[in-house]
Image 1: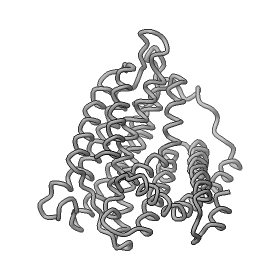
Image 2: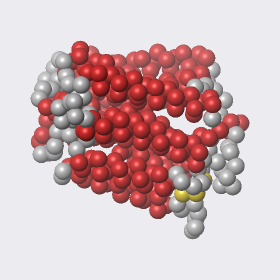
Image 3: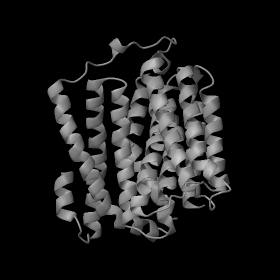
Image 4: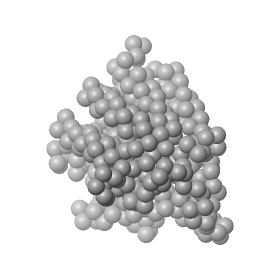
Length: 351
Protein backbone atom coordinates (compact mmCIF):
# COMPACT_ATOMS: atom_id res chain seq x y z
CA UNK A 1 0.00 0.00 0.00
CA UNK A 2 2.83 2.36 0.79
CA UNK A 3 4.54 1.82 -2.55
CA UNK A 4 1.28 2.13 -4.50
CA UNK A 5 0.39 5.32 -2.64
CA UNK A 6 3.86 6.69 -3.35
CA UNK A 7 3.48 6.03 -7.08
CA UNK A 8 0.06 7.71 -7.18
CA UNK A 9 1.00 10.82 -5.18
CA UNK A 10 4.60 11.56 -6.22
CA UNK A 11 5.06 15.19 -7.36
CA UNK A 12 1.36 16.00 -7.00
CA UNK A 13 -0.45 18.73 -5.09
CA UNK A 14 -2.66 16.88 -2.63
CA UNK A 15 -5.95 18.08 -1.10
CA UNK A 16 -6.31 17.92 2.67
CA UNK A 17 -8.29 14.67 2.74
CA UNK A 18 -5.73 12.85 0.59
CA UNK A 19 -2.89 14.23 2.74
CA UNK A 20 -4.53 12.73 5.82
CA UNK A 21 -4.81 9.35 4.10
CA UNK A 22 -1.16 9.52 3.03
CA UNK A 23 -0.16 10.36 6.63
CA UNK A 24 -2.00 7.27 7.90
CA UNK A 25 -0.31 5.04 5.32
CA UNK A 26 3.05 6.63 6.18
CA UNK A 27 2.58 5.77 9.86
CA UNK A 28 1.54 2.22 8.92
CA UNK A 29 4.65 1.89 6.74
CA UNK A 30 6.86 2.91 9.69
CA UNK A 31 5.24 0.24 11.87
CA UNK A 32 5.64 -2.31 9.09
CA UNK A 33 9.33 -1.49 8.59
CA UNK A 34 10.15 -1.92 12.27
CA UNK A 35 8.09 -5.13 12.50
CA UNK A 36 9.98 -6.73 9.59
CA UNK A 37 13.29 -5.51 11.04
CA UNK A 38 12.42 -7.25 14.30
CA UNK A 39 11.71 -10.50 12.43
CA UNK A 40 15.10 -10.35 10.71
CA UNK A 41 16.81 -9.45 13.99
CA UNK A 42 15.20 -12.40 15.75
CA UNK A 43 16.55 -14.69 13.04
CA UNK A 44 20.17 -13.51 12.88
CA UNK A 45 20.58 -13.05 16.65
CA UNK A 46 22.97 -10.74 18.48
CA UNK A 47 24.92 -8.58 17.93
CA UNK A 48 23.63 -8.27 14.37
CA UNK A 49 20.00 -8.13 15.43
CA UNK A 50 20.49 -4.91 17.40
CA UNK A 51 22.39 -3.41 14.48
CA UNK A 52 19.60 -4.23 12.02
CA UNK A 53 16.95 -2.68 14.26
CA UNK A 54 19.05 0.44 14.82
CA UNK A 55 19.92 0.83 11.15
CA UNK A 56 16.27 0.40 10.09
CA UNK A 57 15.05 3.07 12.51
CA UNK A 58 17.96 5.35 11.58
CA UNK A 59 17.17 5.03 7.86
CA UNK A 60 13.62 6.11 8.61
CA UNK A 61 14.73 9.03 10.77
CA UNK A 62 17.44 10.21 8.36
CA UNK A 63 15.09 9.78 5.41
CA UNK A 64 12.42 11.94 7.02
CA UNK A 65 14.96 14.61 7.94
CA UNK A 66 16.54 14.71 4.47
CA UNK A 67 13.20 14.82 2.69
CA UNK A 68 12.10 17.79 4.80
CA UNK A 69 15.48 19.47 4.34
CA UNK A 70 15.35 19.20 0.56
CA UNK A 71 11.76 20.47 0.42
CA UNK A 72 12.34 23.47 2.71
CA UNK A 73 14.55 26.51 2.80
CA UNK A 74 15.67 28.93 5.47
CA UNK A 75 17.24 28.69 8.90
CA UNK A 76 14.78 26.05 10.13
CA UNK A 77 16.40 23.55 7.76
CA UNK A 78 19.76 23.93 9.51
CA UNK A 79 18.31 23.07 12.93
CA UNK A 80 15.96 20.27 11.81
CA UNK A 81 18.46 17.50 12.60
CA UNK A 82 19.17 18.95 16.05
CA UNK A 83 15.48 19.35 16.86
CA UNK A 84 14.70 15.79 15.75
CA UNK A 85 17.58 14.17 17.64
CA UNK A 86 16.89 16.17 20.80
CA UNK A 87 13.19 15.30 20.58
CA UNK A 88 14.12 11.63 20.21
CA UNK A 89 16.29 11.78 23.34
CA UNK A 90 13.53 13.44 25.37
CA UNK A 91 10.86 11.02 24.13
CA UNK A 92 12.95 7.89 24.71
CA UNK A 93 14.55 8.82 28.03
CA UNK A 94 11.30 10.20 29.47
CA UNK A 95 8.29 8.94 27.52
CA UNK A 96 9.32 5.37 26.66
CA UNK A 97 11.13 4.93 29.97
CA UNK A 98 8.30 6.40 32.02
CA UNK A 99 5.57 4.37 30.31
CA UNK A 100 7.49 1.09 30.65
CA UNK A 101 8.06 1.76 34.37
CA UNK A 102 4.39 2.55 34.97
CA UNK A 103 3.37 -0.58 33.05
CA UNK A 104 5.75 -2.76 35.06
CA UNK A 105 4.98 -1.40 38.54
CA UNK A 106 2.11 -0.45 40.74
CA UNK A 107 -0.47 -3.06 39.81
CA UNK A 108 -0.58 -4.05 43.47
CA UNK A 109 -0.06 -1.82 46.48
CA UNK A 110 3.60 -1.41 47.34
CA UNK A 111 4.79 -3.25 44.22
CA UNK A 112 8.04 -2.17 42.56
CA UNK A 113 9.82 -3.23 39.40
CA UNK A 114 13.21 -4.93 39.05
CA UNK A 115 15.89 -3.66 36.68
CA UNK A 116 19.45 -4.70 35.92
CA UNK A 117 21.28 -1.66 37.25
CA UNK A 118 24.66 -2.48 35.66
CA UNK A 119 23.31 -2.47 32.13
CA UNK A 120 20.87 0.39 32.72
CA UNK A 121 23.57 2.63 34.17
CA UNK A 122 25.97 1.79 31.32
CA UNK A 123 23.31 2.61 28.71
CA UNK A 124 22.41 5.90 30.38
CA UNK A 125 26.09 6.86 30.64
CA UNK A 126 26.38 6.27 26.88
CA UNK A 127 23.39 8.55 26.25
CA UNK A 128 24.93 11.26 28.46
CA UNK A 129 28.26 11.19 26.56
CA UNK A 130 26.63 11.22 23.11
CA UNK A 131 24.14 13.95 24.00
CA UNK A 132 26.81 16.15 25.58
CA UNK A 133 29.24 15.80 22.67
CA UNK A 134 26.75 16.33 19.87
CA UNK A 135 24.11 18.66 21.36
CA UNK A 136 25.77 20.65 24.17
CA UNK A 137 29.45 21.04 23.22
CA UNK A 138 28.66 22.80 19.87
CA UNK A 139 26.95 25.57 21.84
CA UNK A 140 30.18 26.43 23.69
CA UNK A 141 32.90 26.10 21.04
CA UNK A 142 34.86 29.28 20.33
CA UNK A 143 36.12 28.46 16.84
CA UNK A 144 32.64 28.08 15.38
CA UNK A 145 29.77 30.48 14.80
CA UNK A 146 27.19 30.12 17.54
CA UNK A 147 25.74 26.59 17.59
CA UNK A 148 27.58 25.53 14.41
CA UNK A 149 30.73 23.44 14.21
CA UNK A 150 33.68 23.77 11.88
CA UNK A 151 34.35 21.00 9.37
CA UNK A 152 37.01 19.34 11.50
CA UNK A 153 34.89 19.58 14.65
CA UNK A 154 31.90 18.04 12.88
CA UNK A 155 34.12 15.22 11.57
CA UNK A 156 35.39 14.54 15.09
CA UNK A 157 31.83 14.49 16.46
CA UNK A 158 30.79 12.00 13.77
CA UNK A 159 33.74 9.65 14.37
CA UNK A 160 33.37 9.85 18.17
CA UNK A 161 29.64 9.06 17.91
CA UNK A 162 30.29 5.99 15.76
CA UNK A 163 33.01 4.75 18.13
CA UNK A 164 30.77 5.15 21.18
CA UNK A 165 27.83 3.47 19.45
CA UNK A 166 29.83 0.47 18.22
CA UNK A 167 31.43 0.04 21.66
CA UNK A 168 28.02 0.07 23.33
CA UNK A 169 26.56 -2.48 20.89
CA UNK A 170 29.48 -4.85 21.44
CA UNK A 171 29.16 -4.45 25.21
CA UNK A 172 25.42 -5.07 25.18
CA UNK A 173 25.47 -7.95 22.72
CA UNK A 174 28.73 -9.79 23.35
CA UNK A 175 31.00 -8.76 26.22
CA UNK A 176 28.47 -8.14 29.00
CA UNK A 177 25.18 -9.37 27.61
CA UNK A 178 24.01 -10.54 31.04
CA UNK A 179 23.98 -6.91 32.23
CA UNK A 180 21.07 -6.20 29.88
CA UNK A 181 18.90 -9.26 30.47
CA UNK A 182 15.52 -8.76 32.20
CA UNK A 183 14.96 -9.73 35.83
CA UNK A 184 11.91 -11.38 37.35
CA UNK A 185 10.12 -10.19 40.49
CA UNK A 186 12.68 -11.97 42.68
CA UNK A 187 15.64 -10.32 40.97
CA UNK A 188 16.77 -13.40 39.02
CA UNK A 189 17.76 -13.17 35.34
CA UNK A 190 15.10 -14.37 32.90
CA UNK A 191 16.93 -16.89 30.73
CA UNK A 192 16.85 -17.04 26.95
CA UNK A 193 14.73 -20.21 27.12
CA UNK A 194 11.76 -18.06 28.03
CA UNK A 195 11.86 -16.36 24.63
CA UNK A 196 10.22 -17.60 21.45
CA UNK A 197 12.10 -19.63 18.83
CA UNK A 198 13.62 -17.60 15.95
CA UNK A 199 11.57 -17.44 12.73
CA UNK A 200 12.31 -19.75 9.81
CA UNK A 201 14.82 -18.72 7.15
CA UNK A 202 12.09 -18.35 4.51
CA UNK A 203 10.11 -16.02 6.77
CA UNK A 204 13.22 -13.95 7.52
CA UNK A 205 14.08 -13.63 3.82
CA UNK A 206 10.55 -12.43 3.05
CA UNK A 207 10.90 -9.86 5.81
CA UNK A 208 14.17 -8.62 4.28
CA UNK A 209 12.41 -7.86 0.99
CA UNK A 210 9.39 -6.31 2.71
CA UNK A 211 11.70 -4.24 4.93
CA UNK A 212 13.35 -2.71 1.87
CA UNK A 213 9.92 -1.95 0.36
CA UNK A 214 8.71 -0.39 3.61
CA UNK A 215 11.81 1.83 3.92
CA UNK A 216 11.39 3.06 0.33
CA UNK A 217 7.73 3.80 1.04
CA UNK A 218 8.51 5.67 4.27
CA UNK A 219 11.18 7.89 2.76
CA UNK A 220 9.15 8.60 -0.37
CA UNK A 221 5.89 9.30 1.44
CA UNK A 222 7.76 11.61 3.82
CA UNK A 223 8.77 13.66 0.79
CA UNK A 224 5.15 13.70 -0.42
CA UNK A 225 3.82 14.64 3.01
CA UNK A 226 6.46 17.25 3.92
CA UNK A 227 4.52 20.28 2.56
CA UNK A 228 1.44 19.23 4.55
CA UNK A 229 3.48 18.78 7.74
CA UNK A 230 5.06 22.23 7.48
CA UNK A 231 1.76 23.83 6.48
CA UNK A 232 0.01 22.20 9.43
CA UNK A 233 2.65 23.44 11.86
CA UNK A 234 2.41 26.95 10.42
CA UNK A 235 -1.41 26.92 10.44
CA UNK A 236 -1.42 25.94 14.11
CA UNK A 237 0.99 28.82 14.87
CA UNK A 238 3.52 26.37 16.27
CA UNK A 239 7.29 26.96 16.16
CA UNK A 240 9.04 25.35 13.20
CA UNK A 241 11.12 23.37 15.71
CA UNK A 242 7.96 21.36 16.41
CA UNK A 243 8.50 19.61 13.06
CA UNK A 244 11.38 17.74 14.72
CA UNK A 245 9.04 16.63 17.51
CA UNK A 246 6.58 15.26 14.95
CA UNK A 247 9.33 13.27 13.20
CA UNK A 248 10.58 11.82 16.49
CA UNK A 249 7.07 10.86 17.62
CA UNK A 250 6.42 9.11 14.32
CA UNK A 251 9.70 7.20 14.26
CA UNK A 252 9.58 6.13 17.92
CA UNK A 253 5.94 5.02 18.02
CA UNK A 254 6.76 1.29 17.53
CA UNK A 255 9.44 1.31 20.25
CA UNK A 256 7.02 3.02 22.62
CA UNK A 257 4.38 0.34 22.12
CA UNK A 258 6.95 -2.46 22.45
CA UNK A 259 8.39 -1.01 25.67
CA UNK A 260 4.94 -0.61 27.23
CA UNK A 261 4.01 -4.22 26.37
CA UNK A 262 7.33 -5.47 27.78
CA UNK A 263 6.63 -3.65 31.03
CA UNK A 264 3.18 -5.23 31.31
CA UNK A 265 4.76 -8.67 30.87
CA UNK A 266 7.11 -7.96 33.77
CA UNK A 267 10.18 -7.57 31.52
CA UNK A 268 10.93 -4.04 32.68
CA UNK A 269 14.58 -4.25 31.63
CA UNK A 270 13.50 -4.81 28.02
CA UNK A 271 11.63 -1.50 28.11
CA UNK A 272 14.66 0.27 29.55
CA UNK A 273 16.89 -1.29 26.89
CA UNK A 274 14.50 -0.04 24.20
CA UNK A 275 14.39 3.46 25.70
CA UNK A 276 18.12 4.01 26.09
CA UNK A 277 19.02 1.94 23.02
CA UNK A 278 16.77 4.06 20.80
CA UNK A 279 18.33 7.24 22.17
CA UNK A 280 21.84 5.90 21.58
CA UNK A 281 21.03 4.86 18.01
CA UNK A 282 19.29 8.15 17.27
CA UNK A 283 22.37 10.16 18.22
CA UNK A 284 25.14 7.71 17.42
CA UNK A 285 23.97 6.91 13.88
CA UNK A 286 21.83 9.86 12.76
CA UNK A 287 24.36 12.61 13.50
CA UNK A 288 27.30 10.93 11.69
CA UNK A 289 25.08 10.11 8.70
CA UNK A 290 23.82 13.67 8.37
CA UNK A 291 27.34 15.01 8.93
CA UNK A 292 28.53 12.94 5.97
CA UNK A 293 25.59 14.02 3.79
CA UNK A 294 25.55 17.72 4.73
CA UNK A 295 28.05 18.75 1.99
CA UNK A 296 25.87 17.03 -0.63
CA UNK A 297 22.75 18.72 0.74
CA UNK A 298 24.59 22.06 0.90
CA UNK A 299 23.29 22.56 4.45
CA UNK A 300 25.28 23.58 7.51
CA UNK A 301 24.07 21.62 10.52
CA UNK A 302 23.11 23.59 13.62
CA UNK A 303 23.60 21.14 16.50
CA UNK A 304 23.95 23.28 19.62
CA UNK A 305 20.93 23.41 21.93
CA UNK A 306 19.40 26.55 23.39
CA UNK A 307 19.36 27.37 27.10
CA UNK A 308 15.89 25.92 27.74
CA UNK A 309 16.73 22.72 25.89
CA UNK A 310 19.96 22.27 27.85
CA UNK A 311 18.06 22.64 31.13
CA UNK A 312 15.54 19.98 30.05
CA UNK A 313 18.35 17.68 28.92
CA UNK A 314 20.24 18.04 32.22
CA UNK A 315 17.01 17.39 34.16
CA UNK A 316 16.34 14.28 32.11
CA UNK A 317 19.83 12.89 32.67
CA UNK A 318 19.77 13.68 36.42
CA UNK A 319 16.40 11.99 36.96
CA UNK A 320 17.54 9.07 34.82
CA UNK A 321 20.66 8.56 36.95
CA UNK A 322 18.54 8.39 40.08
CA UNK A 323 16.10 5.99 38.39
CA UNK A 324 18.78 3.43 37.45
CA UNK A 325 20.82 3.80 40.66
CA UNK A 326 19.28 0.66 42.19
CA UNK A 327 17.53 -2.58 41.25
CA UNK A 328 14.07 -1.34 42.25
CA UNK A 329 12.00 1.31 40.53
CA UNK A 330 8.57 2.59 41.54
CA UNK A 331 5.69 4.42 39.91
CA UNK A 332 7.17 7.67 41.20
CA UNK A 333 10.18 7.23 38.90
CA UNK A 334 7.91 6.70 35.92
CA UNK A 335 5.71 9.67 36.82
CA UNK A 336 8.71 11.99 37.15
CA UNK A 337 9.95 11.07 33.68
CA UNK A 338 6.51 11.62 32.15
CA UNK A 339 6.25 15.04 33.81
CA UNK A 340 9.59 16.04 32.28
CA UNK A 341 8.30 14.82 28.89
CA UNK A 342 5.13 16.87 29.34
CA UNK A 343 7.26 19.93 30.12
CA UNK A 344 9.31 19.34 26.97
CA UNK A 345 6.20 19.03 24.78
CA UNK A 346 4.58 22.10 26.33
CA UNK A 347 7.73 24.19 26.00
CA UNK A 348 8.05 23.05 22.38
CA UNK A 349 4.62 24.53 21.70
CA UNK A 350 5.03 27.58 23.95
CA UNK A 351 8.81 28.22 24.09
